[in-house]
Length: 336
Image 1: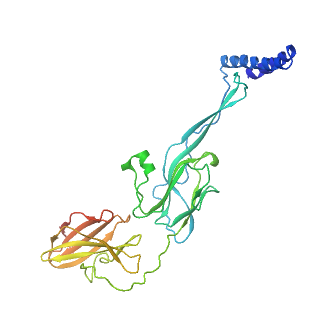
Image 2: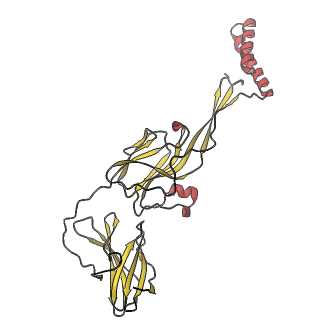
Image 3: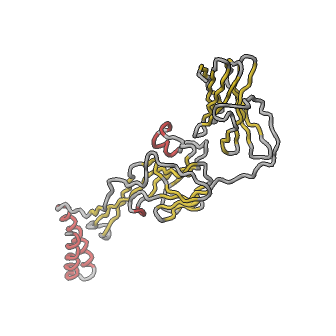
């Protein structure tokens, strides 16, 4: 560039005329003059680094299987959400001394991405280690510096809430909770150390802690009715919700009407402790001939059904395990 050539020439001439100081002054004047020549020729001394146009993403598929892990294992993640590339510009001065111009500026770029990566069916106990390609970026609760701004690990609990960071970007109503799925949300995952692409993320997961078997071996009167012999869905066996909570359900008859009833117990101690009891609205019944229930895959809802009378009338209701409320019972005459 002209700034470099004229700076050298100015320094040489200055030294001839006035050794020492003349070289410094001549070099500075030559640098300024060269910068003006560069600018007139469109060579303004800016050096621009390479840029990315798209993001290469590791495995991200609809319908991919969710690993079910027993014990401790290392599994590959599946990207369930990712933003576009986030570009950060870095400008640095190159050459030129004393602020008198003639120096070049280098403009480089770094890239990061926000993403969520599914791991396995939950609940899991913990994520022990995370690898990005072959590099450990997280281990025993500590992140390697400079990899992410922040990250949140979800263990796949039945009651886990949607991620607030994703909600801040996508909207509160646009983010599922992915209950029953263990996953990690990364904020500003830096890509420079991985060839400016999203690395292959693998996770070592640990199983949930196992509580000791309760020593209590007695019985408890729940105060609800069930059929001894059932036809549909195995009847109304207790449902385990996780975190030591168990649901016991049935119906309570009163004259020509009945209600569904659900009782929630804490079974983490030596004896079950009743936490709450909820009844549905009443509905007309005569002789109850069958009853059953089933838990939704995400653990949020229970559907209960009761068969009554010679006309084979069925009553259905949905129970919300989170709000602990019943919907409205629905009756329908159906074939046996």
